[in-house]
Image 1: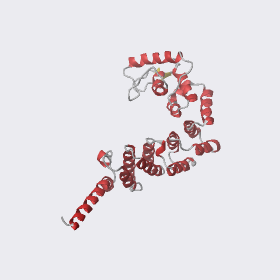
Image 2: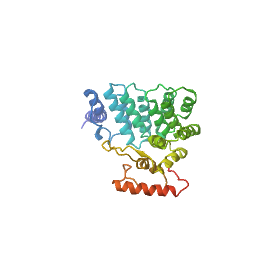
Image 3: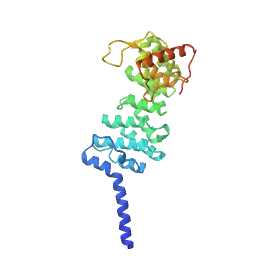
Image 4: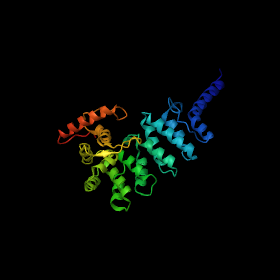
Length: 298
């Protein structure tokens, strides 16, 4: 084979490789989007940085195509151990948070929640902070919770919480995010608000929010409600009109955060039969009542 022929072969191999890396998103663009999930072949076995950077080219495309680009970036990077790929991905996804499209912004926020705090670059953190300073930012509450879970946004959220006028729903969401960040003022605000209500049924209603904070002072309210056998809640099964012990629902939410909890749940956070739940709740309450305090796995 001559030098010229060798050069042509190498050139074709390189071009073929580059083409393979971009084929999926270009195919999606030609289709105008896709309703199917991102196939493993779109990222598996490929250089994560190349996949992420290529998909990022389509983030400003029409909604269906851009959403698929967000998904590919999220999937490729979260499955990668390459720190650079993950950090590049979070920056692109944070920019996508500012999209006017509900689908794109929500998808970006969902994938960002799967990254580790160290994956967020200074640029990504700066963009998030800017969004948190503006109460009118789209999807503000979800972005605030995602950011707080990554240790981002304390100063911005605190400033907004203390100085801006807002409805109680938004103030509650910001208080939750600040509590997750360890802000004592917000933690005490939530505890005081729930204590004033003096209604453990309300504690159960917002238990998912309270568990998100991962703050002992707040989690203690859930534990106290779990110990109460007189609280009755609607059954999750819409065909069952009879109310059930609220402890079943609360046990699943708070249990995984309590050290040495006497009940073990499956990967879905559930037990098996109704009989198992009945026995488990009885055992849990006895265990809690035997202790002055519990320790949390935070």
